[in-house]
Amino acid sequence: MKNYTIHFLIITIVTALLGFTGLEFPGDKLVRIICLFAGIALMISCLDAVIVSRKNKRLKKESQS
Image (cartoon, rainbow, N blue to C red):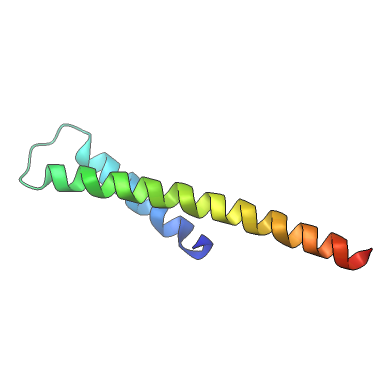
């Protein structure tokens, strides 16, 4: 999941700019929903990266002891 962090960030920024700038077009509600899901996926991806890095540090520390 952490390999997709940059992808989710780009999707979130692009869809936020398209969906929340006040432009009127037929798919604006769909773009807002995509922005919501991409933002949630971005948060999960960032949390996954933090949790995995802490787990790896802990495992390295235990193996050195």
